[in-house]
Image (cartoon, rainbow, N blue to C red; front, side, top):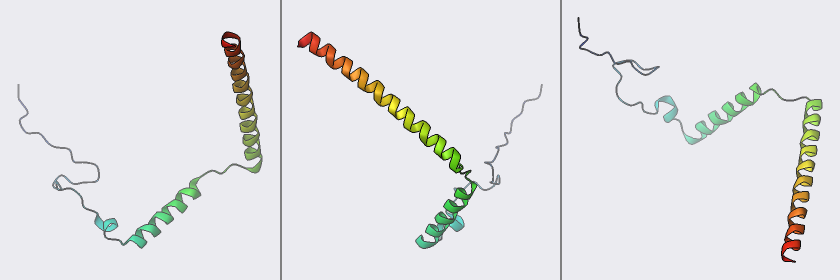
Length: 93
């Protein structure tokens, strides 16, 4: 049986095997604050263009569903609170 004596290290993705020193900022690290702010703004705009925005009908439907849900929860909390206050009045009152 043959033993394997040397191990081959697998480099991190995007790095060569002989590049063992930690990466410094590169091009991004040398930009000034305004350039970085501009890059940040361009990235925000690019991400917002990828968003699938709801139609007016979908937005109206979602809004109505949320309002109805909130009203139901308000009613539930009111009933539970009223029940507890009556129970406390009965026990301690």
